[in-house]
Image 1 (tube, helix red, strand yellow):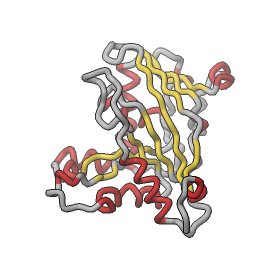
Image 2 (cartoon, one colour):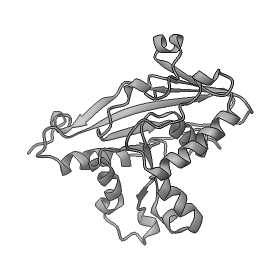
Image 3 (cartoon, one colour):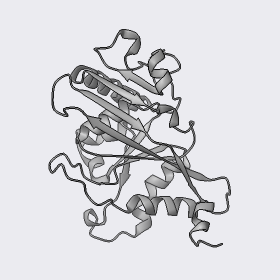
Length: 237
């Protein structure tokens, strides 16, 4: 929800949902201003382009429970299902009330045009050992993720890893994001107030590749991962 654009209908407000898309009246479309106070200029520019593309191609998007987003400055892990390739990231950038920084392999930063795009979109570079001759330790692969959380940002990741668009089958979850959570808390072990909010997101496309189809994006109930969480599972000082 954008505080500067009244994009909520009375019915949607009662259901905790927001409806966006060109087939709705102008007051129901995606808000034109960010209102999050943290998005980088390049991110806002790219998000504007994505919003235009999503509103043209899809007939509408029902966004439910966006109020579950933690406030600005609270480090967050956003876990989403990944079934429609790059469109998933475009849709999330369009509807999320805060800036979401998606992870990408650091080799993309070296490409002339792609590098500018991922940098402007505030993507987070993750080093893969196989891209660096296997000479990296675990800490080096995730340093940028931990720094983003230190700055109070949201990291967007799909536990499935690659998109399931080609197979339409579920995949075992990757475990890297779990290591990020543990290492982030260990990094701030002496700070009892430090926490990472974990927020889940489910996206359902009525017809993913059909013109003027519809989408539903629902955000789950967040939970907190902190020092207390680790102590409950055996971690000690």
